[in-house]
Amino acid sequence: MRIAVAGSVATDHLMTFTGKFADSLVPDQLDKVALSFLVQDLDIRRGGCGANIAFGLAQLGHAPRLVASVGPDFEESGYLAWLREAGVDTSTLHVSEQHTARCTITTDESQAQIVTFYAGAMSDARHIDVEALHAADPIELLLIGPDDPDGMVRHTEAARRLGIPFAADPSQQLAWADGDLIRELVDGAAYLFSNDYEDALIQQKTGWSAADVQAHVGTRVVTRGKDGVTVFTAEGEQVDVPAVPGITAVDPTGVGDSFRAGFLAGIAADLSLERSAQVGCTIAAGVVETIGTQEYRVTREGFLGRVKQAYGPEAADEIGAALHLL
Image (cartoon, rainbow, N blue to C red; front, side):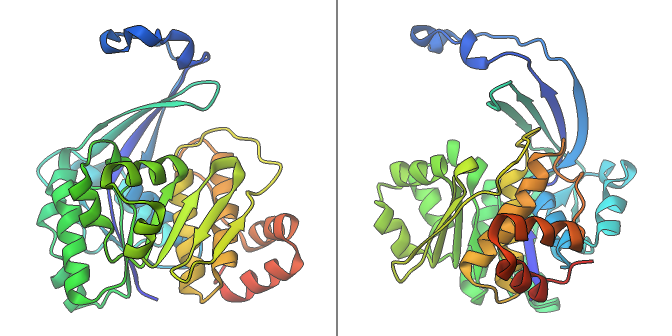
């Protein structure tokens, strides 16, 4: 299956605070909040939701096409070569005059995070023509992740118009988006990804119930952190998959992106929803144990060994036969 991933590309500046953000918050003074946190380290990594998902798909044997806007510094920094070497198709990237997007993430000891994001080149994603890309090399599944809002809408409209199955993953853009925009991004999606908080936010802002949301999409996938994932189908079925046990969490950044990559790799391999979610949970386990969103590597032996330990030998056999793991 030819998968294209539309979403942000950014550099991540990761910092760790050795306390809890909550200890510095005064409930009745939140409208006057002015806080400064002394962090202990700084780690600069490659990131961006689109790039993270594409990298994860490449780790699982795909050659996903990355549909994104980057700056002139993207090649100079070595990021372009990094993705190409990983197996990501970067041939159709749009190069903007602006600096590549930058994300600053501070994580406290309870794994709570404060994130700030500079859009930069990402704002030019609205100029990418999905219809032209599809005409040149047909797209069989398009994931539309957090990106320039106008670009997300344009990509979604193109997918609906051209009949391209698409996965809606608005995630980080939900915080500021209004109900009309969310409805526009979600309606008609073959797959809708969110975590449990984002799932509630979608319902709150759109005014839809969970059943209403389900009526507008095919399969709804809700991740629940250490509690695993729940998959809801259009037929009313619910599939619960536990997280991989025994994880030593180091950094949660990019975990959701890697899950999406794993789930879609499973779908592309004609695995069941349960097996696809297990693939997603397994690759996510490797990411949460690593600092950085693209610093992990998937090997056939290690990956299937973890699947077997978490979900049993039958799952490992089915997944091993379906995925092209090295």
